Length: 77
Image 1 (cartoon, rainbow, N blue to C red):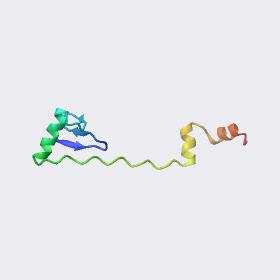
Image 2: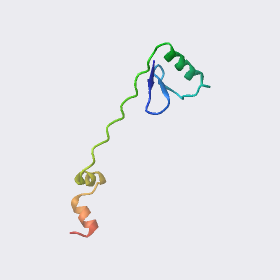
Image 3: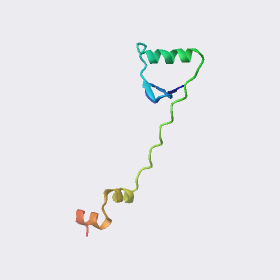
Image 4: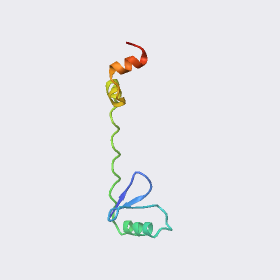
């Protein structure tokens, strides 16, 4: 079996090989024959949802700074 991808290659599920769409490629020709025989590849997976934007507090926490440290760096204390 095969699966479409979000780019132009075809994923062969048996061994996770990516097959480029090149008619000179034996594996791609095998895929085309498989489709011609009435088979349908699995659809491409949905791309993951974009993460929610970080709040200012989350951005500060990710930076490793505390509010006090940021104020000190900015000369706001």
